[in-house]
Image (cartoon, rainbow, N blue to C red; front, side):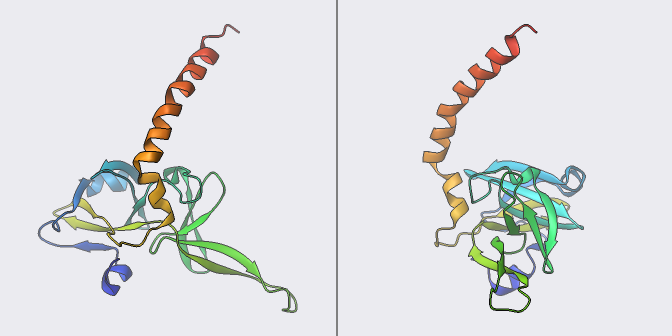
Length: 177
């Protein structure tokens, strides 16, 4: 996990990249793209720029692997979140917590409030060095739900599914209308 100081400031600037960090790209390119996905160090990472701040996390949603690169950024109860485009799961940019809306049925009138499911998405440290962007992995030994989409088992399953998807696509696109 990150130290408390790193958690409150996931983007830092220094004169040399941290040891074991991974180069993502030039800061201006990341800002222009708004979102960049990259396989670095065997991990698929999403780096995004929101309101001038860089964030990094595993690129697939912890729930069912949705492409977070395509998700909207929204604020929920003062916390900036990326919303998975598949099932609308809300994930905080800073901590990777999954948020849900709860209702206390005994409250009058019942009022929905945003609650945390805990950390579900692995977030990573972003560092800027001489206008270059680097990511240092969150190396917490605790298993986080999004870790599944970084496993060889998941990648093997996806590789097996791709030829079937490609054949179906070829069949559909080769039909004469």
